[in-house]
Picture 1 (tube, rainbow, N blue to C red):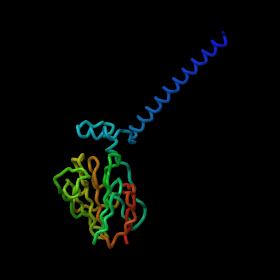
Picture 2 (picture 1 turned 135 degrees about the vertical axis):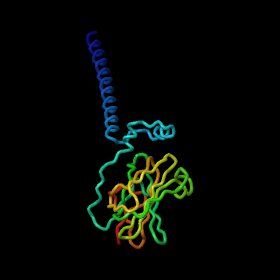
Picture 3 (picture 1 turned 90 degrees about the vertical axis):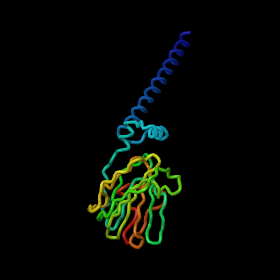
Picture 4 (picture 1 turned 60 degrees about the horizontal axis):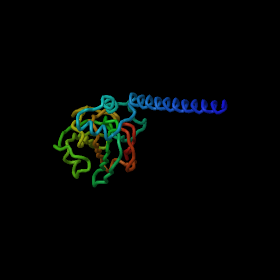
Length: 225
């Protein structure tokens, strides 16, 4: 009888221990997730954020995460061209006179664009009237966008900041006549969308691959021939 009683007590203690460990583990997970958010590491549900964007009810913590602006130091190398944006290379077009590199940004990416190659800003022009999704044909042509032309040692290069269906605003930090250096801040697209870089074909050699993940101001995407 006494033995059965002890076994019952031990079972109850084991159950209590399991419950205690489970609660402790859950608390640690919640604390970890909270720490990640406060340190601007992504821990939000994309579907929820998109719905908030449509309803103009942005989570303040997500807004801090989105607006993060980490220090970027270009590689200490010569004859290089760096990515103007964070994101994924979705297309590399080999045109007659130039290369066109298209970079798609997601909600997870840093949205500050940077100068790919030192030079002088020739022009900053706005165009487009639509806010189409990237899935819509000709969105690269029709959507609201800002085109910055920079005169460099290899000729004129262009950086296009293009809006999307969730993006309503583009900021540009440079203006015509400015002298800019590789890695300098060029502007910012508020929420998602696309950046397009055009380089003179005879002077540049593309070394980045399709679908590669790139980072503004640090990832080398081409070299000067």
